[in-house]
Length: 160
Image 1 (cartoon, rainbow, N blue to C red):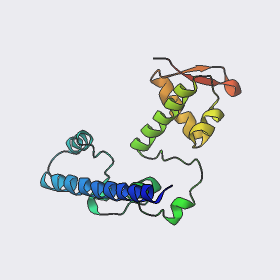
Image 2: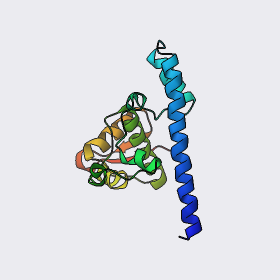
Image 3: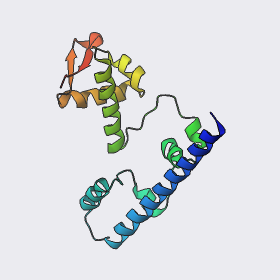
Image 4: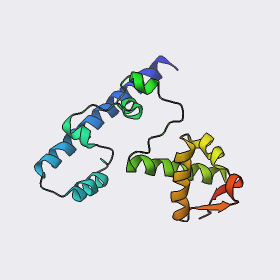
């Protein structure tokens, strides 16, 4: 990469980090002024203005430690993030589960063939339990078809 390109990338990262900080500060101020608003209204407001990735920890000043957030702010990764197991996914939160389900579905649509849960695990990461949980949700919402029984079960995204 040329020196000019590196300098441009650095400026873009700094700008992105500054915009994230400004968004967080503005959102925090609005939330503090409307501290009597119901949580559902605050969540709807956050999604409407594009601040859906702001957490309660952000509002009370706790630092983020996840690697994706640190990359967005151009911060160096933490030790725990560098030791993370390859393929690990976050499914403890509603947002994490939603993102993982969408990743599984989009990769299945892109691949367009019948796949086992192990194939999906290799493509999307996560554990077999996480894959099966995501598939169960997608099946219940009629987004994925199932064929076979027990060890020969295969899954395929439904055509739209």
